Image: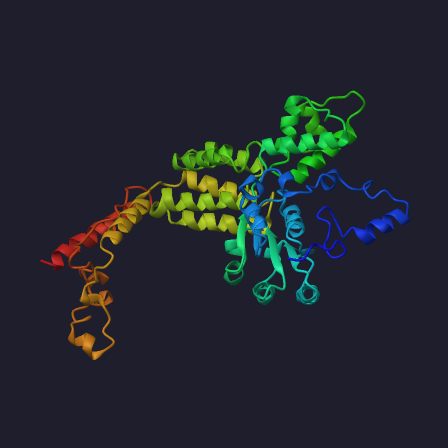
Length: 454
């Protein structure tokens, strides 16, 4: 592989250096003066990246690729401020590739064609290109398809970054040609290391009491860039000799620390509490836990998905309208957004908590799944199978099938079960809500079935 040419390869810490540095020097400007702290502390090596040891640690997945000198196309999936752009720049430097960066928000097919043509020219001169596409999920399917030929022929090494699940947002053809690398939200220990690095760079400690320092780390919510931006705000705001406590810090930066870490224990504890209070028919407690999650910044659509799950697991056929209400609440939130749409989630929560409860569907489905796995190869009775050919008619397919709408009570009472399995009972409705009427209807049909099969 050819040695890296500094005229062609961009500086991992920023734009191409040579000509840009000359311009700053000619103008008598200090290039570092206007740069934010987060930019000045951008890691210069993969080993300096914090919070992603599973990728860039001594035995990390990306470390292994760099050692092999062939990284292939990649998709970086993770929250904001976790180092996706920085790692892409460093990979370009480590593998002697020219770094080109675009954003899917501001780029179209014409821009891609221009970039691909430039990459072909560099490849002809012996220089490869790492094309970093931020927010790659914003491209439509046709735009994503444009990457496929240049990925296959090696014109570019694609590194796409996304905060959305690639399985849902990127097409299968692109994913089959790229390896997904998951970036994790920075934990408080990683944020703490960033703050120590910031203090070393500034040559002064943050004027924060210990509890305020911990609160700042939580305010960053796993985002390293946000942590350094908050640190800058603290230094700007503090007077000589002043030290902020947690309450003052909140007033200064106008940001609250999350009540819980969305990726850790509190996230699961509160969603579990919401689900169980709905199941326990306590609308007030359910609203309390819903409000706590909303106040903490929990993903509203995650909450909506859990409400849908509660509707089908704990209410089911006792009130089938519960599922309709929850889906409508999700759509209302999509339409209104925050904070107006949150009221729809509250309405759905109250509806679920006050609805009659039944897990009969949930239990029936588990029983049916178990039975299906055990008897998956059994054929349905020929009675209910269609007979589109003469041979199948001669074999008895559909011969004695009775059309239920032609029968008294629109009920024939036929046996629909595989002969070797026999009739099974999975669904047993409760006596609550609509299921009381469903149970009466099933009992009536069972009696008719017995009468007509004697």
